[in-house]
Image (cartoon, rainbow, N blue to C red):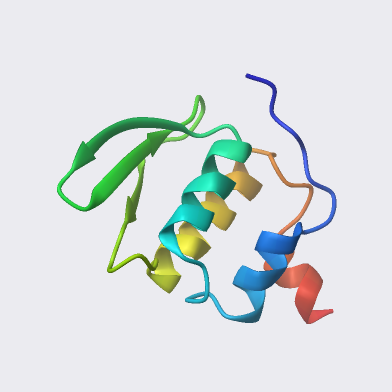
Length: 95
């Protein structure tokens, strides 16, 4: 699977940055897969994603079709640390 490096936030990232709780779970899952994260397993409402180089698996929870803001931030942070996005999109929006 080819991983696309993002130099600018995509439409979904901009939506997440405007309000971290605004993404529905399907959108967050789509963003994770687009960044190269692999759905490893499911435990209840939690979807566990892995990525080579990631120290801990990423756990995303479907809460009535929505995501938790903390999990959106965790995905963005993990993608930045793995070099999947050029810089922290949160910082880009604040400048």
